[in-house]
Image 1 (cartoon, rainbow, N blue to C red):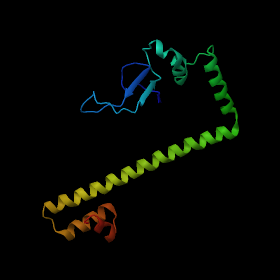
Image 2 (image 1 turned 90 degrees about the horizontal axis):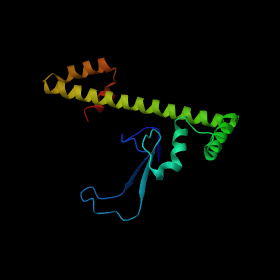
Image 3 (image 1 turned 135 degrees about the horizontal axis):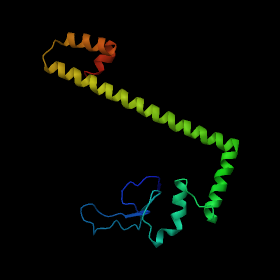
Image 4 (image 1 turned 60 degrees about the vertical axis):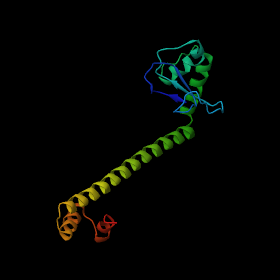
Length: 154
C-alpha cells in the first residue's frame, strides 16, 4: 500500500506488519501474509528502502529524472495527460469520486437529522408534554408529514 501521508508518524519509508493475535503476540496466524505500507513523506530510509526511495519522492512531485525507472513513470504520466481519451476517463473518475463524497455527506447529514428528531421526540415525551403537541411542533419545525412523523415512533 502506498500512502502520501505518514499514518504512523514515525517518519519511516516502510511499515511492515505480520498477522498476530491481539491477545498473545507469540501466536501467529501462520499464512505468511505481510502488510507493507510505504510512506511518501518518509524521512528515515534504511538500506532495504533505497530501491523505493525515488518512487516515494515522485509521489510528492519530487521525482529524480536521472533514475531510469522514475523517468519511465514520468513519461507514462505525460502520455496519459496528453491522451484526450485517457484524460477524460481520469476526469470522469475524479468527478465520480466527488459525487460519491457529496452523496455520502448528504446521507450522513440526513441520518444525523433523523437521529436528532428522534432524540427530540424522546426528550419531549420524558418531559410529559402531550403527544399531540409534540407531534404538531415537530411536524412544523421539521416540515414532516403524518407518516414521516409516525416512523419516528416505531
